Each structure stands twice: as C-alpha cells, then as structure tokens.
Length: 295
Image 1 (cartoon, helix red, strand yellow):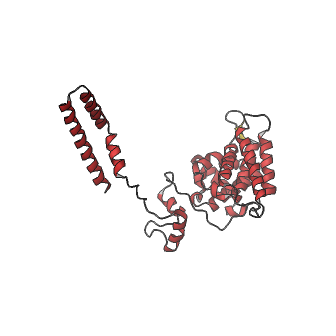
Image 2 (tube, rainbow, N blue to C red):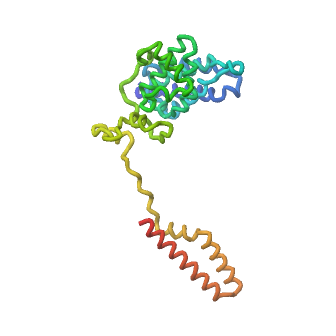
C-alpha cells in the first residue's frame, strides 16, 4: 500500500512525528494534555496503521515512538505508598501492545530490563479485569514473538513472580489463548548483545542451540544471513608513514627533539648531533618493533 501511495505513508509518518514530539514535551507545554496526544495516536493507530494498513514505516521514528510510549506507560500518581498507574499510563501500555504487533523489529531491540521497569506487569494484574487481560495479552505477545523474552520471569521483578504466576495459573492454562492481537509465524531473532543478565541455558534457548552439539546444521545458513559470519574482522593494516608518526609522537622522543634543538641553538653542535643520533636510533628501534608486531 505504501509503495502505491507514498504520499499516504509520508502523511502518517508526519503525524507520528508530531505526536512523538508532543509526548516528549508534554510537561513543557500546556497546549495539549497527555490524554489528548494519546487520543490522537489512538486515531492514527486505529484508522491508518492497525491491521497492516501501512507497513514499512520509518524505523527510527518507530523506535522513538516505542520509547515514548514506554516512558509514559509506567507513570503513577497518588499518595506515597498508594500510587497507582494513571489512565494515560494504561492507554500508553495498550498502544504499545498494538504498536508492537505492527512494528515488531524495533520493539525487539529493547532490553528485558527496560521492558520490565516500564511495563510493570505486576501492577497490571491488580487492575480491573479488562486491563488485567490486556496485560496478560501483551506479556504473551512478548514471550511468543521474541526469543529473548521466552521466559516471562525476565519481564517481571523477581519479588512479584509468585503474584504473577498465581494469576497466570489461576486464570489461564495457555497464555496464547488470551492474545487479542494475532501472533505471527515469522520468527524474530534476538538482537546481538552481551546477555549478562541471562544464564547459559536461557541464551542457548534464545538461539536454538545446544551446549554439546551446537547449532543444527540446517539453521546455520539462515542464521548466517541474519547475524553474518562468526569471524572477527581483521584490524586495519597501518602504513609505514602512520607507524613513523606514532613513534615521533612518543613523549620521550618529543622531549629529546626539543632538547636537541635547544642545544643546537646555543651553539653546542657536538652535543646536539649526539642527541640527534639518539633520537634516530630510538625511533628506528621502536619502528622496527612495531612492524614486527603488526606482522
């Protein structure tokens, strides 16, 4: 659709750009309230994007929109110790879920920690029945769409695992049965990252690998297309001139050159010549060592 009507895609991206800008500056201006901005986003989502109406939107814009929705999805207000998620936070949460179904790739780039602190699933399950269902649906989407989020515990603070698990077990046997947005068959691969927050078993599952046999042979070619070859790139080969410049930039060499020039200026040429020879020998030795090291 966007190829046939590029002006339509540009129009939608322009609207999204305005909404994203407003979301980031809502506290600095009184022209629009947060609920007004989210209502505008709701209109664009329902009538211009939802259901695959407009694929291939600008990736960076989508990433900024997802970030803005996440930052507003965790807002709470109220007395200390009794703060509750605001209606706008719930609306941002729902829009994030619907947006995730349309633009899955950029959502997969967020870390589990960012999603955990922003989406606050432990608070969603304490809301009314409708909002609890939405929370479980979005949790299901994340665990179903993304290999790096297969374990829902990675998306919930550890102190609330028992509460969330009780709700999941008490209400539903299969998370996918409550998903309002359809789960797609296409696998979304985990982004390249240093997963220090995951144990080895989870990382192996994320990449469908085995600690003894490794990757399945039929998956290697596909993963090579996704991640590239598992080869450390060769460092750039320095030129002779760059190696020489590096030697001349050495602090001790610079000091010796300055002393050589100063002594030459005060007419002590024999001493100046000796120091010049010392500089040349020092630079030559360092240059030879650098060339050998690079070989």
